[in-house]
Amino acid sequence: MRWLVFVAALLPAPAALAGPLPEGREGWEIREADRPSKDLAAALDAAIEAGPLGKVNEASATVGAGRIGKSIPGNKVVGVFAPRYAVRMLDASVAAGIEAPLRFYIVERDANAAALAWERPSVTFAPYDDGGRTLDDLASELDGVMADIADRAAAP
Image (cartoon, rainbow, N blue to C red; front, side):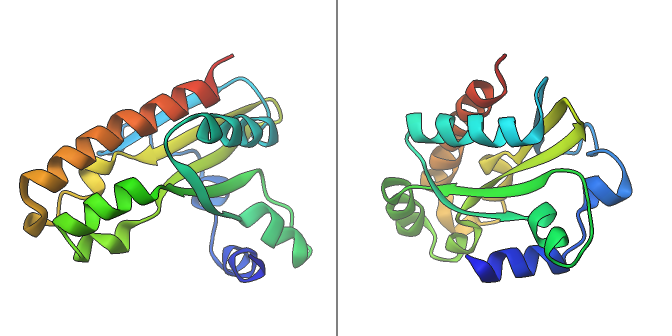
């Protein structure tokens, strides 16, 4: 886990350093939440726990920046996946395995608001033609799973 925080400290935090998340970015979904980013992160953890995916990892550029004496707005990436989806994905396309885990991205908007963003799995897995209809169906199913988790996390 330490290396994830270290890596996160080395990476720029695009939304925090270069302005807001790009609204309407093709393939991305964004849910706004009227709560601080730390509270949204806790709500995301609870929503993941309640759903069919599991939290695989997390990396916080905010934490990493703090370790080098810098302060940036709340910024965290949370990786999610589950064995039952992994087996189906790999049965369809071994190459697609590089895309796991799927990721949620939390970005602080201000002290009392944050955004939760993710790339739809159907977009993430689209380049893997070798997966055929099996991978397309899985990706479509995961689109719904990710949206459900995000909706629960961002709900008031």
